[in-house]
Image 1 (cartoon, one colour):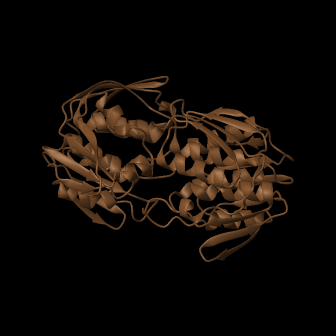
Image 2: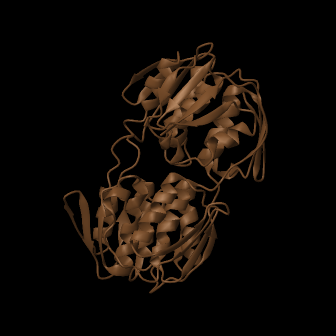
Image 3: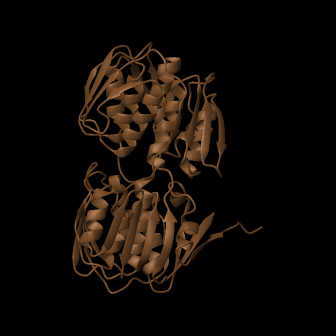
Amino acid sequence: MAKLVVEHSGPLSGCVAVGGSKNAALPVLCACLLTEETCTIRQVPPFTDVLVLLKILRSLGAEVLYDAKKQMAVITAKKLTSTREDAALAEKLRASFFVLAPLLARKHRAQVPLPGGCPIGTRPVDLHLKGLQQMGAKVKLEHGDVLARCRRFQGSRIYLDVPSVGATEQLLMAAVTAEGRTEIENAATEPEIVDLAAFLRKMGAQIQGAGTTHLVVTGVRQLGGARHTVISDRVEAGTFLAAVAAVGGDVTVQNAPSEHLGAILAKLKEAGVQLTVESGRIHIVSDGNLSSFDIKTMPYPGFPTDLQAIFMVLATVAKGTSVVTETLFENRFLQASQLLRMGADIKTEGRMAVVEGVKSLTGTSVCAPDLRAGAALVIAGLLAQGQTEIEDVYHIDRGYCHLEEKLQSIGACLHREEETEEQ
């Protein structure tokens, strides 16, 4: 067990670099199962979720070499010895479900537990299963597992009731080796899907329309190995920008995917932050005196739900009243109760939160209820008066690599304390 101890920090300064995207790396790693040949994936940071997924791939029979220092994974799935995913590992992350389509494509059968992950609300996999069934898979649920069989996926025309990122990625991996042509309408358009499609094309897939709501895939008989570098993490970039906006400072965020941050940059400017955007870097200047703003989470290119909790922290000290509306998940205001403990003025009702800016927050003991809420509490601790202790930081480690070290490098006052059981 560990906790983060965060102190009130003055203006931040210097440079901080963004790493590879967790949400892009996970489906790309699963897609390596689609070929017998070796795939080399770069810019794969050692997030807890990544390390668990690599264990899952090994348990299925893939040969996995991972260099955490170089952040490079080399995966050869020549012999898949199992089609049954380990339940204890699968319950740790939602991305465990992405092995379903590759296993069916390669081994024609799969037993995959319903996925785990953060408790931010219901995230059903019905769109995944409905689409796979349209492509010829036989699917049934038994004791919390999905049992599926498929001789070979058949091309189909699939309409997604909602533009689900996960379902789009799952069906894309099914379609690339399907017989015939597959069209996915109302597909999600997130940059992580574009990145997955880019990797699959390097493997020999024929994909058109990535980044639009209409994907067209012409199946090929088999895919080959490929080398790929995962895109930079737009959520991590947004986290650093929000930290500087809240605390104040003059920081350059390097390796920032500015082309993926339109909605985030717009809200920061609305809050009164100065931004200079260049290719691969964003320079941010803030005096910490923020104006109120409203956000409404939406599918890309709208404001990302993964940054909603973090921007709520900015709203707690912004001058005036801010309204935060969460349209994607029904249980994603878990950070609000912890921020109230720190002196925030937040009223929630359903999927809407009204935040009245206060002069300052006060440090206290809080718990990270999920990944993004945990990162939000780190920023809250940096601007709060006194000391903040954050428990359950394993949530944060699922999606941030060396977060405290990176923040320390630009002047933030925080450190990690390991807790051991008394003997």
